[in-house]
Amino acid sequence: MRAAPLFMATLCGCVIDPLVFKSKAERRNLDCYRLPEAEAAARFPGQVPPPPAKEIAGPTTDVLVCSKRYLEPDERKARDEAILSSLSQQVNELTESAGALAPPGARWHVDAFYPSAPVAQKIAVAARTTLAERGLVVSDRVPLLAAGDVSVLAAMLPTEAYPTGCARAFATDVLSGDDVFLALMIVDPKETLLHGGLCVRGGWRWLP
Amino acid sequence: MASRLQPQPAVRSGLVLLALAMTGCVTVYQPLVGLQRPIAVDPQAPNNFSATRVLVRCHPAEGVEPDVLCRNLRSSLSKQGAQVTTEVVRPSGKVSSSAQSEAAPQFVIDVTSKLVHQKDEPLLQLLNIVSLTLVPAISETTYGQEFRIRDAQGFVLAQQSFQERFVQSFGLGVWVLNGLIDLLIRPKSEQVTGDGYKEEFTRDLHGHLAQLLHNAKVRARVMNSFVTEPPPERKEPPP
Image 1 (cartoon, rainbow over the protein chains, first blue to last red):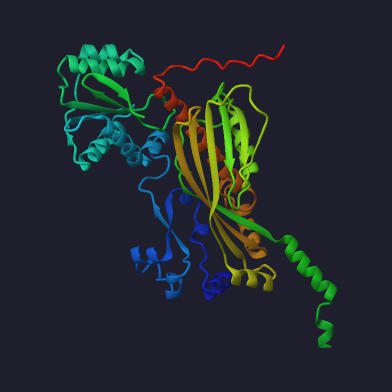
Image 2 (image 1 turned 180 degrees about the horizontal axis):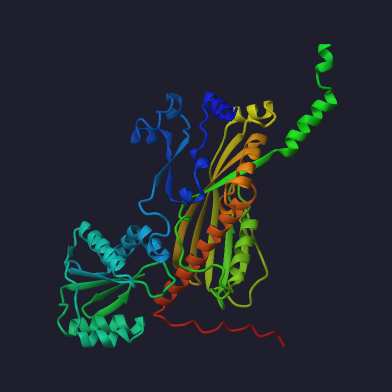
C-alpha cells in the first residue's frame, strides 16, 4: 500500500523528490544549481532524459543539479570553510583590482596573512595561480623581512604594520623597483571577507 | 439490500470533511546557494551592531511580500543592537518607510527577493482530490534573495546571493506517515511536520545577513584607513 503513491507518481510522469528521503545534514551538504533541461541532458547524458522537441523549441523546464561536497560539515572551522568555499571568487576580484593598480611588466610576489597556516597557503597559491593565468610574471618567492623588523611590525596595528612593512621591504632591498607585493588578509577574527593590499615602490595601498 | 450498504450522503460528506481536517503539509527546506555556508559571527549576540545605523530597503518581486521580509530583517538586526530603519519600495516606485532615524544611516542594505522557480504536478493534485488526499500533492518552490550593502556614499561594501527551495507535500497519507515517523523515530531536529523548516530558513538567512553586515563594517573600516567614525551629530530641536 505504501508503494501506491510512488507507483501512481511514476505512472503520471512525476518524480518523487529524492530530497524528501535525505536527512537535514545530507541536504545541507549538497551544492545545487538550476539548469535548463536541454542543457542538463547534454551535460549529464543517461541521467537526464532529453526533453521533447516541442520543449526545446518552446519554454523549457529546469533541472536541479546537485553534487555532494567533498568535506563533511564541521570538518573545518566555520571561518575557514566560509572563506575557502568562496575563495576563487574573492581572489578573482582582489587580483583584478590589484592588476589595474600595478605598473605593467612588474614581477608579482604574493603572500597571505591568516591565522591558520594551511589556509593562508591555499589563499596565496590561489592568488598566484590567478595572476599567472592572466599572463603576469609571478614569483613563488615570498619577500622576507629581517627578524627584528618582523617583531616590530607584529606589535603594530594593521593600519600601520602593512604600510611600514612595505616601506621597509623596499628600504632593505627585499623588493626592488620592478617588484610588486600583493598581500591578502583578514583584519577581524569574525569576518569571512578577504582584504587585499598592494605594495608598489615602497607605497602601500588597500585594494577597493 | 445493496442500497442499504451505501453510506448516507451526510456520512460521506462527514468522511470527506474529516479527511480534509486531518490533512496536513510536510515541507522540506533545502538551502541551494549560499545559505548552507557556515558563518563566523553569532547572530544571537546583542552587541554585534551596537551604535550602527542601518537602512534596510526591500524591493518588490513576484511571489514575495517585501513588507514582511523587511519587518523580519529589522527585528533580527535590532536584536543585535543596530538602529534600523526600513523602506519598502512599491512596484509603482513609491517608497514607504518606517520611523525616520535622527541621523543618516551608515549602511544601506538593498534586499531583492524573487520567486525563481515554481512547479506543481496537476495530475498529482487531481489524484490527491480523488483519493481524499491519500495520494500527496507535491509542489516545489525556489526563492532567491540578493543582498547588497553600501556605505553612506553608495560604495558597495558587500553583496551576496542566496537561493533556497521548499518541497511541500500535501495530503493525509504523507502527513500521518511522517507524523508517526517524527513521533517514533526522528530526533526533534530532523522532524519534518510542523514549522521547523521556517525556523531553519530564518536562522540561515538572518545569520548570513549578520555575517554580511559584519563583513561590510570591517571593509568600511579598511577603506577608511581604520579611522573610527565619530558619533553622529544629533539634530538640535528648534527653539
